[in-house]
Image (tube, rainbow, N blue to C red; front, side, top):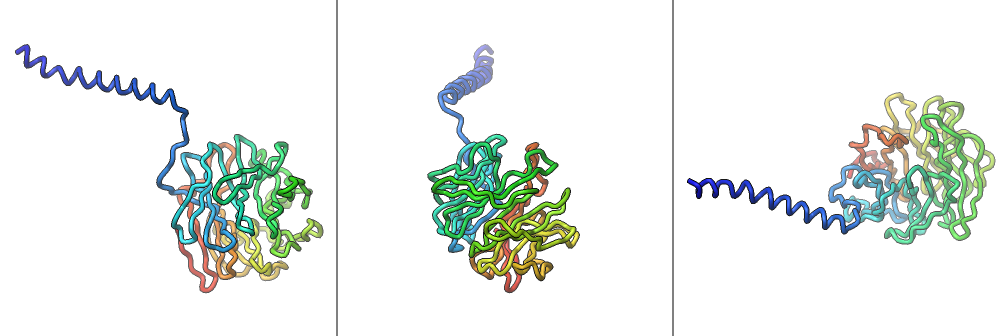
Length: 321
């Protein structure tokens, strides 16, 4: 009887002791190692794509353990490679025209800086000074300058004034281009003669403007009471793609002539917070599903459904990767 009780009690005593010993050992091992960022092997939230100059690759954002990390992949969605692995957010990636660098927004705590790196993720360099809070980088045609804007969301939901500047990569010299009011999403035309940008008039009337290459002679192209914004040039500079909710059922991508004529164009895609991005090939319009970051840390419910989407303009078709 005593032998039977001993044999039945043995597992109850042995396994708790073994578990406690194992946990103590794991705690000791963990204490000796710095906590690293987990590497996620599946990615459900991919957004903000930007094509390489030859259209063979995309740089994009993927959410990894709550952080926005930059990846590249082939245009067909294969061979994804992670570029950034630090414990900060990275937004608005833009591939340089010469194909050697990627500009992006580096977010540390509540500060946004414009940074550039090699296409393999090496040689990260911050371009903007710490006193500036900066977003939305784009490149000059010669890849020697980056155009960007100061942050218009310092105290959301109210917008604050924002200027569009350019920074020289070699000298770090900053040149103001468009000032006065709320000016964001600036980008030079392929020939550098014009700048397309978004300007908010009054409280919340977002319009697409174009100015001369030095920021002078700004004029309103869309002039519509609905939202118009997030412009992008076609490769030949003859057209501008932009997002609008003028049809009253969410945001769609439209294309207009660069002088603002035919602004209604055709509806090329439908997405909540859609931002246009035209690839180097004239037959393709890439657009990205955007969601404005709330400084409270919350995100739009559409986050779970983000996808990288492209539209073939002739004929119009949509595919998702």
